[in-house]
Length: 334
Image (cartoon, rainbow, N blue to C red; front, top):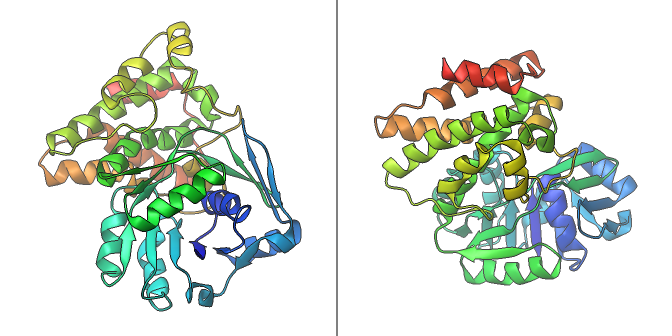
């Protein structure tokens, strides 16, 4: 099965590189800048627990030509959500009629958008649970744990087996929207990571930041559930327990939530990386999705709205406000 990773940045290079290590019919498609880096250095893939994988420049195919899509049987879409529509139009012009396109993106809207634009093709949704950081010179580091989840189809069943063989824990689901809303709850911390300017582990070790995240999650979960959406558990903790665990005192949290702190000490969110790289933010597809759902159902989302305004200000200024947990907590409680 020839696989093209379309929009291979941090997530795409990590997932695609692991697949390429066991299957030479994997092509990474992306920017000229990254192609030059990988053509020179190859790919070094590390994980805070697992064995390092290295692909020399001659053993990894990174293309900047759309023609690489012509005979692809499966396309994994890993572009930022704001680039989905443009990317799908490019894919549509080159896609094999029998191919399937699978989204591995943040947010909840991409699977529907893909089905609408690629209505003549097979499509499926997917979810990436972990954080990957680009450390430069072709080195991509995964700093958190979790399983890839794909919407169940024949093709994603084959992909699941390849992923597992490549050392990428994977499972299938019949409710990808429920999974993506479950992921939204966890992704609400992406914005807080931008606002704190701290590594994820350090941030989550601070009870004040955790209380802010708990309030964000409580608001979002109420909106999602009141909208009639079933939230599927992503990770080890059921959605209804996440905010309760986050509010625990530090000593209890560290004991009960060891999995939440099973993070590389230097891991950061992808949104923080976007801020550092001068890129646009995906906030509209994460916290913004909660706000949109609230408006659709005539509900209020004051906490999400406030966090979005702070993130937009950070991106407009090109730097984090580096707010303490106490400052953030006081602001959303007023």
